Amino acid sequence: MLHATTAVLSDESRSLAGILLLALVTVETGGLYLVKIVRGRAPATEFQEKFARAGHAHAATLLILALVCQVLVDSTTQTGLLEWLSRSGVAVSALLMPGGFFFSSMGTGRTEPNKLIVLVFAGAALLAASLTSLGFGLLTA
Image 1 (cartoon, helix red, strand yellow):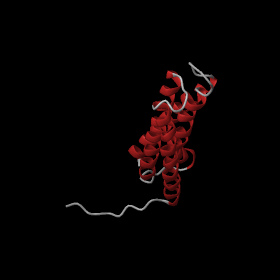
Image 2 (cartoon, rainbow, N blue to C red):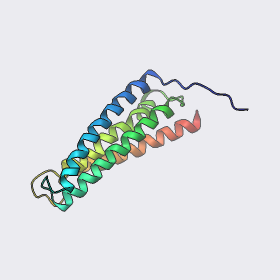
Image 3 (cartoon, one colour):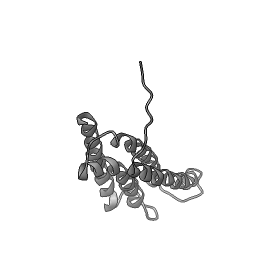
């Protein structure tokens, strides 16, 4: 027999979830710029269009994943740095990775990324560390 339980978010999860939902509105707004590029109403090279698509997709996907992490981290017994990594790391990577795509492709006529592409790799490393932390936290709770 299954027993129904009521899930209550921690204060930390509730606050960060609210921020993440508001951040998704900015991703939606950024989508309007992408539509302008695709329709030829904003100048962009083929490279810049690809990076705009990648940045937009990563932002939305990672913010949704960060929302899911809020529910999951409340099911762990983590504290301190590991809790922060599990709770906030994916959200921070949702800034770093898209930022890397956008900032490394800025500039008139750019056809290859500038040095800010390093943000994509930093975000990917943080994402991997965060998901690993949360996964182990759930398995050991």
